[in-house]
Image (cartoon, rainbow, N blue to C red; front, side):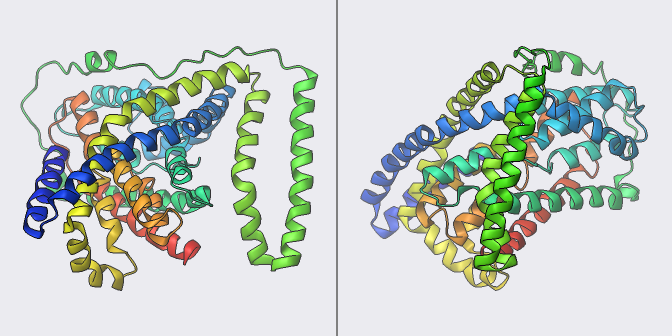
Length: 436
């Protein structure tokens, strides 16, 4: 699908430029787009490495395990057909905990392991079980409690003065997405059209071999030092100091701007620094050698930045050509009256359409949109929020069902696309609430 989309962007840009006499502009746009992509990566790699390093500190300090323990009782109710002590349940818990922390690289191996274990419990080997459908509905719309690091770094590189302002709207959008996907799963699972269809026995599943070829989740490479009195004292001292300063700033802002506006400004100014301090303190409390853990996470961030360069170059160059050719403006003007009537700028539609197909492609379109309209404009805010509102639905379904050798997905796509749509609606509503 993405192959044809990318080919269509390039060829339609050239054809429309030939029609309008803008061939020179399209050529310039091609080279400007490739340069912008490389400059973008250079601008975001440092922040991405630092933030992934901080997340790794909290990861090694036990945050993911803490979340997993809290998720286990809920997941046992959502997946009653999976025994609590079965390996599938453990893999599901760890996958969702990793997704909630924004650790996609760690979540994928756990997710594939969960699918292979669910396949062993499945009576119809080629037809998705209820547990498989629900797991993927949640996986493609997972609530992410930590800020979308990559998006924030791109916003900073684009000159945003409030790069982390999209954190809460993104959280709202992912909550809407997950709730809708789960609701659609329960609404459709008993319909006759989506009941499992018995198929002839297939060959040996072989999913374990697929899983064995995958990279493992990042191992804990940090050293856990003894929990001594000074660690507890340091954590308590920092928390007390921050609480005191928070109360001081809160009282001052409320006195100057009123309760609602003062509280909003307090959240905007304190949220991200408090998150950084919290992640570090989790590592300290977890007896982690924080510097070693930071370096390990930063290396992962560098690997991620290197991997996305080809995708960014390809997509940003294509979108830049489409924009300078004039074709994108024609399409936007055609659909703007309809989308504006429901509070959705037509300029964000390319991003919304590409997000379920390709995470890297959507990331590139978001970057180009921020450069074109400004990161702190409403279009920039909404585009940034949409980037974190859902997952790459079609890629995840192909990967996970391919690993489990499932050919009949039942109502998985309907549930996942419902989550995508709800995430879009939630993002629009949250951005109108926070940004006008």
